[in-house]
Length: 114
Length: 109
Image 1 (tube, chains in turn brown, purple):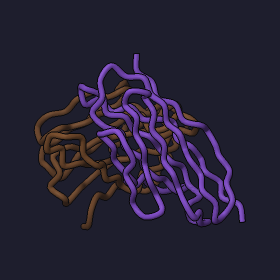
Image 2 (tube, chains in turn purple, blue; image 1 turned 120 degrees about the horizontal axis):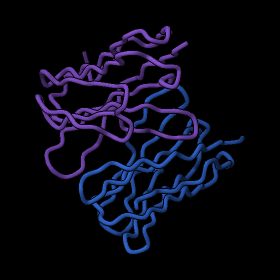
Image 3 (cartoon, helix red, strand yellow; image 1 turned 135 degrees about the vertical axis):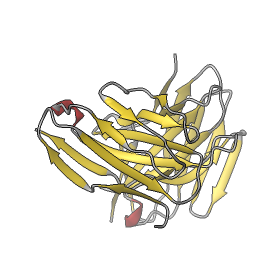
């Protein structure tokens, strides 16, 4: 693995189903983020984690949950998917050594909820 | 409140220069980033400004004026591959991340 990876690449999901989007980084970055990107709205932060074992809510956390059991992995779970969660989801990471730091993004997951 | 504004779309000609503006309002400031995002791809880092002035990096430069709440990204010698969206990201005094909606840049031959 080099950098940050996401799985699946794309998914079509029936409403009401549970779905976990996976994110793994091998850069030993402390901070990780989940964003959704919708046309015309830009990137919106869903949840973040400043370090393993801690998580925080972003701008649009409702309907989503995350966990950070270790440094490398930061899965995003939709407990019961709804059509409004159709979006492109990006995972990102940064060193977060103190000053604001560059974020490195995964390739994204395109999720369609029907 | 806090907000950040960028033009939705801009068009420029190959070989020319284009300036993409980003204006913001915030109670505190810890830096401003510019990212490039090609269609269907992830954003990638272009530049970071925390002090006033111009940061030059090859064909791309970024300028910041904290007193005016203003930044711009300057792209010189435009190439077709520069067709992309350009995202402005503000980091406030609480390290909250505030993203602009992005500017779609269309390059014409």
